[in-house]
Structures are given as C-alpha cells and as structure tokens.
Image (cartoon, rainbow, N blue to C red; front, side):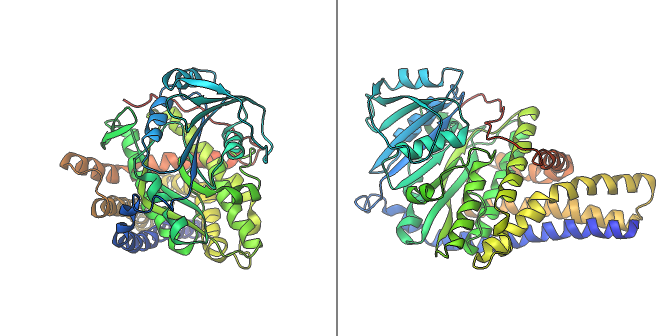
Length: 460
C-alpha cells in the first residue's frame, strides 16, 4: 500500500513541476516574440487619435494610506482619452476625505443608468483640479459590487480595473490596450503586477524599482514573477488564461454588461469573471481572445506580515475553488478550445484539488521518512522531484526576468532573488500548501465577496 501511495505522490509532484517547466518554455518563446514587437509600444503619441477612450476603475475600502498616491499616478498616465473613477465602498477610515481634500472635489449631480444592480450609491464627486477624476461614495457591498457601480457610471467602451493600493507606470495604459487595436477579437487584456514593497514611490511616480528588505515580501516578488512571466505568458498563446489580476486588467464594457458584470458572491471576482467569459463566449461560439501583455506594469503593495499573507492565500484558494465550482460546465466543453480542455482541467486538478494532495503528500512522506515506512530511495526521489525540481523552476523564473525585462539590475538584487529562489521551496511552499488546503476546505461552505483583512502600510 505504501508503495502505491509513494508512487502517487511522486507522480503528482513530477507532473505539476513538469507542467510548470513546459509553461516556462512556452513563456520564453512568447516573451521573445513580444520583445520583437515592442516597437508598437512606442506609437502611443502617433496613434493618439485612434486610441479608444478608457475608464479606469479603482475600488477602494479603507485605503487611506495609499489611495492619494494611486490617484496621483493615474492622473499622470499618458493616455489621450481617459476617465478616472474611484469607488469608495463604504470605507470606515479617511479614504474619501483624503481624496476630497487632496483633489479639491465637489459634489456632482451626474446621472447614470443602473444596468447592473448594485448597492445604493450615496454621492458622486468631481475634482476641480482634474476634470476627468471622480469619486463615488456608496454603501459597502464588497469589491465586485464597487466595480459594478463603476461599470454603470463609466462612459468609455473600455474598462480598466486596478486596486486602490496600486501605481501604474505612465505608459501602462497605452501598452495594455494595444491588443484591442491589433486584434478585433479581444475582449480582455491583462498586464503584469509587480511588488511595490522596497520601491521608491513619490507623488504617484515610480522613482526606482527595488526589492523588499523583509523576507516575506521578497519571496512574493519571486511568486509574482512566476505567476505572470510564465504562468500568464505560458497560457496566453493558447488563449487559456484563467485569470486577469484584479490589480490591472482591461475589458470591453459591453461584454462585461452582457455577462452581468462581476458576481458579488465570489471572493476572487477577478478570476471568476475571466472563467465566466470563457464559458459564456464559448457557449455562444464566439471567436474571442483574452490577452496578456507582459510589459505594462502595475506596482502593488503585498502583505509583509504572516497573518495578512495567510489571510490572503486562504482567500485566493477559496475564490479559486468558488470560481471553478460555478463554471464547471467549461470543463471539456465542446468548442472551448485550450481554455476548457487544458487550462481549466489544470486549474481544477493542480491549482485547486492539488492543494490537498500537496499538503497530505508532504505530511505523509515526512512521516514516512521519520518512521521508516518510506524506503530511502523513494525519500531521495521525493526530495529531488518536489524540492530540487522546484528550486530549479524558481531559478528559471528569476533568469527569465533577468534576460527579458531586467527590472532589478544591481548585483545585490541579483543575489537576493537567487537566494529567494533557493529558499522558497524549503518551508515557504509547504506552509503555502497548508493555507491553500484550508482555503479549499473553506470553499465547501458558502462564502461572500468580502474584501478580507490585509494589513498595509502604504507607499514610502
């Protein structure tokens, strides 16, 4: 019996790490092709007349430490036709007051059509400094409800959703909308999210990219690189993206309205809306594309304490499983392409149910080594397949960053990332699996679209 269990766990870890390796190889070629096309990104000024109008939505709940910096960064975006809407979802801190005072905002009698049902809206403000900047105050209803309010009020054909603790680079919008210009099938486009902890940000400007000094945020730098540079980039050529980060994504407004906007009963609304797009559009046999563009960057603060990180990861896993349950009909659906036949099964088996397999596997094989019911050759094989193979993939992630965009240029940064690549698989990954397993169990109970409790310090 133990032989079969040993073999099962070894096969699982070998399979998931091999899939990561294949995705990283695909991502390398995709990044190479993208880098050869980067001359398009320099045409923003020349194409200003054809750039589609866009509305940036910033849902915010208790973001007083960072919301002004976020709004300032948005006001400095180099984009010709831009509307900015901050939606204060019933914050209990000074989020709204800081915006009103910083941008000289006055009440507006603006009318809008409620095409998606939401919680009650209280007041709309418009800045006297930037006439394209608005603040909406509403009853608390969760992030998805706040986004739906923004979709109702928006006047542009494209919607960009970012988080209230995020900073965009000046050219980010120009780059992320280009799939809509180059491919008429595009219904959504996502950009890269990087860790802002350790960076120099002032008055909404990214002055200098840097790495966090604290251990937990440093490990998350590597996680974000892996998630975006070969997680997103690996699936993008197959039209198999299962998520566009809620911190930075662009959508066709009419398509969001068509599918009913964001669902408020899901704790990972950014993932659920993408899976639902795949499901609904494949049901309609529509020829569509969901793109990922690696160059436009959004910088966001990540948890720096263990409790906030734990809360975030449990919520992410909970939301992943909710999104999967609600859209299970996408699985092996005729006409769904790689989304239904490859990406969705991968998400269900490895990212979803795999949390249980990994957690049980680590405990089982650990106990097997301690009590001797796992043979030494099997224990050695497990170490190399689950730990050494994982370290190898972490190093590959770090090298992809270095040879592609090379944001972190100093030798000290190189050494830090390399150390993180080594240490990530020695404890951190195992604890993460435990949190994800708890999130999996929690998803079996009915959840809500809560914001979650994450401690944030704001930008320096």
